[in-house]
Amino acid sequence: MQNKHMIPLMLSVLLLALCGCESDKQTEANTAAPERSVRVGTVEVAPVTIKDILTLPGETEPDKDVCVSSESAGTVVWLGVKEGDHVKKGQLIARLDGASSGAKFDRAKAAKKLAAEQLRRRKELLKKGVLAQEEYDQIKAELEQSEASLKEMLVNVEYGIVRAPIAGIINKRYVDRGERLEVGSNVVDIVDSSIIKTIINVPEMDISYIKKGQKVTVSVDALPGKTWEGVIDFVSFKADKFSKTFETKVITDNSAGEIRAGMLGRVSLLRRTVTDAVTTPLSAIINQGGERIIYVEKDGVAQVRTIELGVIDGDRAQITKGLKAGEKLITAGHTMVEDGTKVVTQ
Image (cartoon, rainbow, N blue to C red; front, side):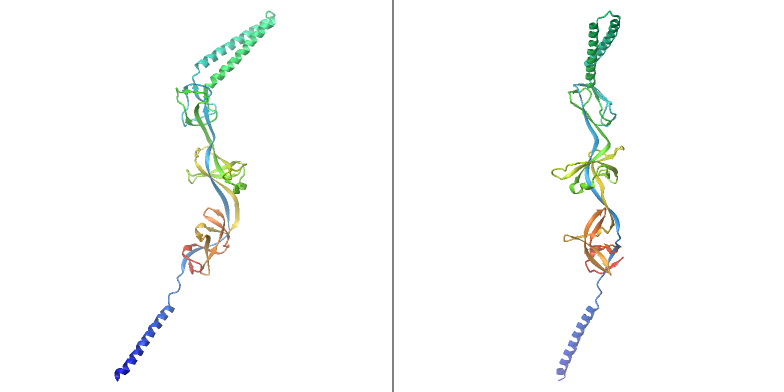
């Protein structure tokens, strides 16, 4: 009989124990740790002035590049320059064999001198009336012929002399002493890079920002960290048929010789200045689903904003929509939050 009474009692105790366990679990759930906050860094957005800079790639060229050729045929008997030499305008570069031309020139010079002396004497005789006018005129004609021959010989001699048509540097020498040249044979290349040109192609949409005389900044990839002031010297009046760009030439003082022709360069110019611009560091922008977003902190919560960009100035971008001055922009930890995430600023 006692066993019959004990069984219901034990079942009751077991049921109470199970209920107690469920109650404890519910209590634990209700007392779970609060939602974790993400630590972020913020900056208060303040209006600033930014510059809209257009940077275009280009290639450098010397101000002058002349290939000097021979005006006569002959053998190079003298060569006075080598590659890398600086030459002045008119400086003698080479001389071709001109022995026969030189001899003819000397004979023509002597003939002219003799004819001039004979004419002087005949003129005295003409004044005294002992010489006929016809004889005097004949001597005068001989003198004029001698002068013409002398000029012709002088030209022939000069054709055998090669001079520098411009001042610059001998960039390439094509001949050596003893070589036989024909008329038009290349002798040297002379390059004047005291002024360097940078050729850029300006897109049609940006051509309104370009004008002759405008100051720009020039840099070359081979010399990082260095810049030079340049001036726009020419803007094409006709766009390229295929690229729809306008060739533009920028000149830069290169008297120090740092920039070499053929280098890859970049030209930066100011399109416009924007005042009171709301900006963000480019690093704070997140590309998500084809949209650009940022996060701002408000009342301890991260809020997502879809933004539209304006001018890019270095590592900052103008925000034309989605951000206002005075708001707290999340610039650190923004990749760890979502819209509605609780945040703690540091």
